[in-house]
Image (cartoon, rainbow, N blue to C red; front, top):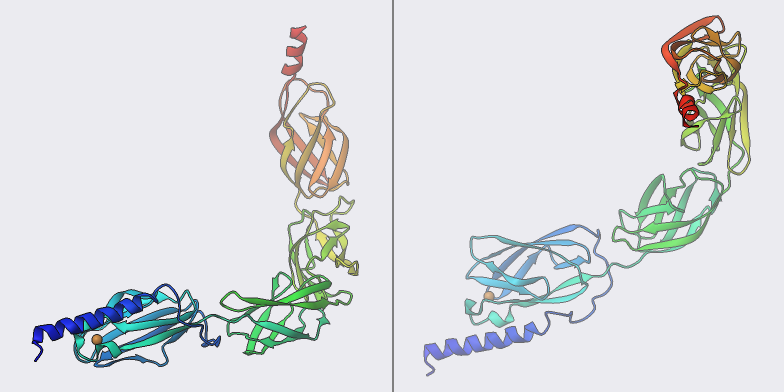
Length: 408
Ligand SMILES: [Cu+2]
């Protein structure tokens, strides 16, 4: 009869041998699993593990994941203590005790088949049969076989046919995200071409795991633009009015001219353009009707004659640059403000009229400063019957010239 103590030793030796054998498999997988994704990918999978003599039971079953998934195991025992030990992912062991739930969380970062065993050799005579495999599947790259239709204007809805599309996949037309994407199945995605310039782009599907497929190609064929309305259709002559143009077939790089001057374009969709009006041209009348011209990068354009009306802004003064000049006539300064017009325009410096007055636009003029005694003076701008006075806005100072003279 074998003494109790010897039997225990024998059991321990057997358990040790099994653990040693398992240890060999820690660094690599036993075999490559079938490349079948468990949908969805890139998610957290939570498994309940119940250990008992003599099995580990994972719920839900099977115990699987995709590369990139986060795996949570909430483990307990229904009898004695067992310990879960798993190649690569649970190397520290997870103690499983009756009435206690303990958890371990890891990222399935490598595909393969990973052996798990019970590492509690004193759990009983069937200990060495407590083992199984955790399967991690490498995600499969998508493929694209067709894009239909293969051409059309911005906003065209296309059907992308291929394989291995996964819920959450994104679609790009060239470098731009589709304006809408619906993954109907692993083989079909419906996407809407975002607003872009005319031309040919590739279509790319990217699964949530980062694997992608590109297809050549989708061609933006864009008819001439048209304008249906503007809002608002008037604003002050000093510009800065935010205007929306509504119409069709606007391309992403469309430009807009207002009264022959380039507007700042803020946003373009195929059916609307948001812009900021430029400063109006100088005019005898401060109310100016300006033509609107939208030009697509392919050269096609649409226009509305006198589509925007500049209204008279109150005359105001903002700055004079430079603010200092020679006593001698000759310094040319730039004055900015609002409501400028070339009608009855005059600028005086300390009561003396400047010369060569040029109103560049409704917000900018240039003028040659007259000769004047040294000192700081008021600048008075008169236009179209309005007058504005900028107190102490300009200084006549010949100091630099005297220094030059003194140096000789
Ligand atoms: Cu056990």
